[in-house]
Structure formats: C-alpha cells, structure tokens
Amino acid sequence: MNGLGLVKGLLLTFKHFFATYLVDIIGGKKSKARRGQITADGLFTIQYPEESVTIPEEFRVIPFLVYTLDEEGQRTYRCTACGICSKVCPTQCIWITRAKDPETGRPITESAEFYIDIDKCMNCGSCAEFCPFDAIKMDHDFHIATYERGETHIFPKEKLGKPLEYYATIRPVNYQAEEIARAAKAQARATT
Image 1 (tube, one colour):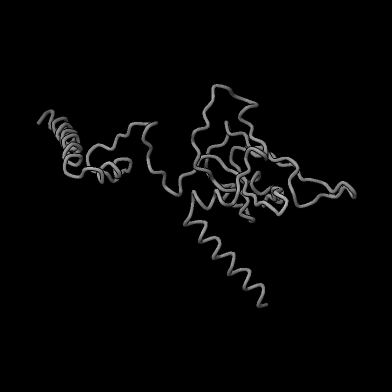
Image 2 (cartoon, helix red, strand yellow; image 1 turned 30 degrees about the vertical axis):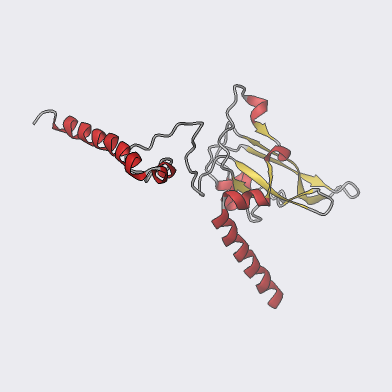
C-alpha cells in the first residue's frame, strides 16, 4: 500500500510527542531530571543553554595536559616530551620541543614547548590512549568556538594544562581505576 511508511512514521512521531506531556504531567520534577538524557521517555529536546545534557564520562573533545602542584605552587607536568603522542596523531596537530639542561645543554625529561592545533584535532583520543605516562587526557569542555582561526586556536602548554583534580571530577570512574592500577604497580615494585 502506498504511503504506509509515511503513516507509520507520523504515528511514531505523535506517540513520542504525546508521551512527553504524559511523562511531565505524571512524573513531575523527576521526569525533568531525566529530560537531558537519551533514555528519557518522549521527546528529549532540551532548552540549551539554560539546560544542558548530562555529559557521559567517555565524552571527549580536545586533549589537555595533566599537572600536579608542588609545595611552592609550581606546576609539575607529567609529560616527559617523549613524542609518542605527536607520532600517533593522525592529523599531526601536536608539536613538542624537549627542554634542555641550561648547564650541560643535554635534553631533560620535560617539554619546553607543547602545542596542539585544535583546528586540526579530530578528537580521536589516540594521544591520550598511547601516552605511557598518563600525561594527556581528553577534556569535556566543548565551549571552545570562536570567530577567529589560526594562531588563536594553537593552544600552548600553559593553556592546555589542567590539574589532576580536574580530571578526577570529569572522569571519576576512570580516575579511580587508574589510581588502583598505579598503587598496585607501586606495590609490586616495592616487593621486588
């Protein structure tokens, strides 16, 4: 029969449309809490920017560099400038320059310069996955759009740096699993 698919599609649309109002009437405040989730009943359109979708833990936008603060408040980056992230990057948007010891001139395990061109970055997460020191993680901040291009979208090390506590808040399950693995590895080293 001609047009049967069109009728089925419209019926499904009307079903979701009316289910939205039934959920709001019956569920009250509890249904509005579920509104920003894909598993919500009915339509799940939200009023952005007043409301926002619950971001899943594995959501990834651009990479950031993890650092910790020492006693003097200085940043200590986990990055050792090994260059694996720039080698595995499919778009080659990461540039690293290794720092040198001012007295001897030999390279040290620290990056002097670290840049990511976010116009080229395709948010694949390869840099974070292959980093052997857990120095690069994927961020959840997707509010990075600007009207400019070029130099303003090449993020230096200082702009890419975020504290370890920030990572623990955006990815609590992953952070906990990594800390358990890190403690087990340290304990294994201590026993041998």
